[in-house]
Image (cartoon, rainbow, N blue to C red; front, side):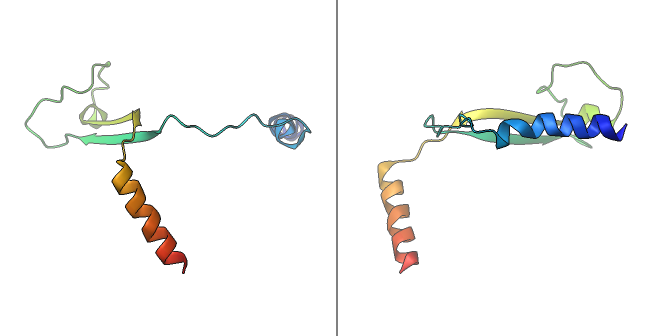
Length: 90
């Protein structure tokens, strides 16, 4: 079993130590993960956010939603943050 695990680990690491570039590029889409946690435990309102099958347990009153959302920042806010960073470096 240990030999199989070592072989799988070597196969997973090989792309990172090879001479080929990783292919990572800067994402300029201005999107970031938005994580929303719904906890309806003890709430009298019926949860309408989930449309999946019920588990018939406490999980039916909880849900985690993950979405990729565009982050909007005004030029004025960006300039203000830049000035704060520059002042902090000094």
